[in-house]
Amino acid sequence: MPKIPGISQRDAVRIFEKLGYHIARQSGHIVMTNGKQRLIIPRHNPINAITMGSIAKSAGLAPDEFRKLL
Image 1 (cartoon, rainbow, N blue to C red):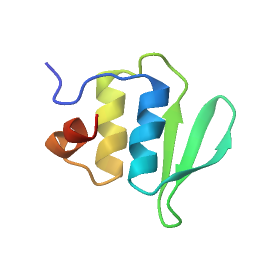
Image 2: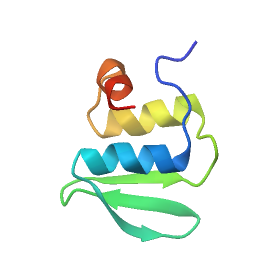
Image 3: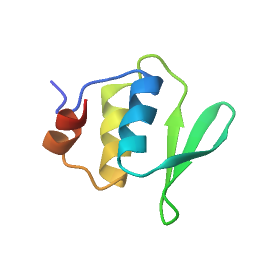
Image 4: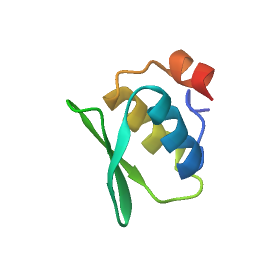
């Protein structure tokens, strides 16, 4: 079982907005930035758990921290 669950794209955007990221642009993917770092969120429902884990790791979140933000 993955440490981070697969979630919808809207939930992913909501979580990263809580962390100070904002949407820079949208097309086939959603690009979010906090001014220093860029995250690419696919428009899948749900986003695969492994992919979501990789995105969270890029943002500097541990699996436990990510689950608390859900």
